[in-house]
Structures are given as C-alpha cells and as structure tokens.
Image (cartoon, rainbow, N blue to C red):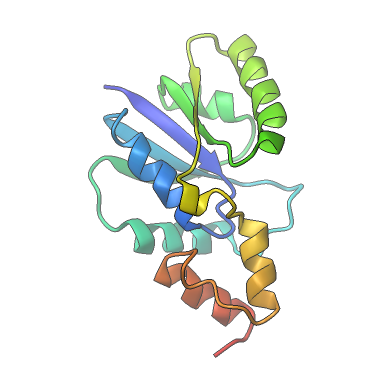
Amino acid sequence: MRIGVYAGSFDPLTNGHLDIIERSLKLFDRLIVAIAKSAEKKSLFTVSERKAMLKASIGAHNGIEIDSFDGLLVTYAKKRDASAIVRGIRAFSDFEYEFRMALMNRNLAPEIETIFFMPSEKASYLSSSLIKEIVSLGGSVRDFVPLAVEKQLKKKYGIR
C-alpha cells in the first residue's frame, strides 16, 4: 500500500490545500493529512478545531486519514510507514525552504521521497495567513476556503 503524508498547519484550511489533497489521492492508496502541532507558530485555531474543519470539508473518504503530530515530520512519516511526504509550493519563494527540508529529510530517511505539488492557478496565491488577514479586516473569503472554514473564521473573528 502506498501511503503519503501531507502535513501542514492548516490554520485554516484553504481551497489550495484541498486541491493538493485531491491530486495526491491519485498517487497514493492512503493519504494522511497531518496537522503539525507547532509551539513556534501562534495558531488561530486549536488542533481539534482544525481537525473538525478538515473533516467537515473533506467528508468521509476511505483514502484519507486526518491526524496530528509533533516533532519531526520525517519521524512521523516513518512511524506511519509512508513512502512519501507531500508538499505544496505556491511560489518560488517557497521553493528554497522546501528544497532544504526535502534534502534534510532525505538524509534522515532516504526511503521516504518528497513530492512537490504546484497548486492550480486559481489557488496559487492563497495562504492561510492571507485568509486570516482578509477576514480580520472584514473581507469575504467565500471563494478561497470551504464553507465550514468560512463559518469558523467568522465565528473566531466575531463576524456575522
């Protein structure tokens, strides 16, 4: 069984994330969408809120598991018997960081590949931080995030 791990903060989930999830399913028998518990990042949503938004947005799908982890992604991927780590690259600015991480992960676990996905054109400019900024300033993100995420963002920012 080919298992892939798509990890991120998903704070919040965007349509760009969903695009990568859908396309990853074509390559893997099982895709683990793993929410990173990062002490460094100040998250808007708790891990359980992010899991709930992922579940509401993806629905029931036999090939997808939603999980969370802390520590090294490559260690988590090894524990889950994954053959690959899935990463998204929106712009060239993402590439340098992701390239260095992929090389380090290859050194730590040569049996695990890193696969990069470029987002669809309509999602190439989306980022979770940009989505949060738009909502916090009263803008609409209806076209950029699933409905369940939009509702939670409005609730978090006290918008009706």
